[in-house]
Length: 255
Image (tube, rainbow, N blue to C red; front, side):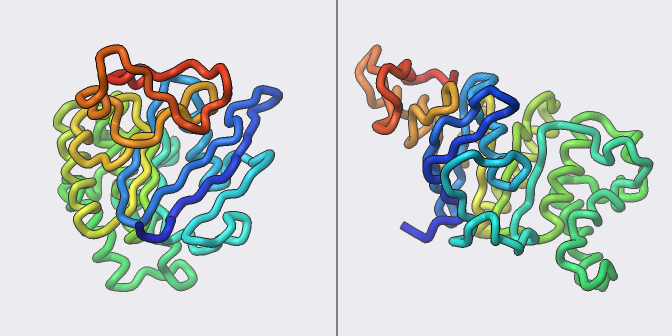
């Protein structure tokens, strides 16, 4: 097994007074594509936001590329795509300007050189938006906004991609573009952590599924659908570290 890119050990996190993560363990190794699955409120988005530092951790340890997250500084190696939002956050901007913002961590003092401009063009090509580079993001559809957010994450040439519900509310054409983009990144050796409600067109890319329920890991292994193909009918698959009394996940279900 290759070295871990992401490592969570006993991570707990609260939102306000509500416990959301209840001591989860998660390891993603170099080159893996791991899906975080579970019902709404299971802790999926909180888990990825804790990894990038947007949610404070109450207990446990998080490491990125072998470095404790509190000391990690090489954020150009990490591409993050948040849950679907407007690509420019309400600020007037062109597609190229939004994608270029994802390259800033690789520049020197914010000055773009030829390699930086080429990286932005390449990211736009990957998501099929090169012909819209000069357009205002306000003119884009929801699926096109999502493509721009993914291109922004790819512009820095990240070793790790973290994507929160990248297919949510996206039209079929954009889903296919996004799946092909991820296939390209995986072929190039990227490590990917995806928050998904369902596997959809990304299923062939998934190496492992980690299913959360009520802030606990209940399954870590083959995607539940694949587990169901080899399990006895009605078999309940419970993660060995799930707390006593935890409700089992039935094979073939994502929530």
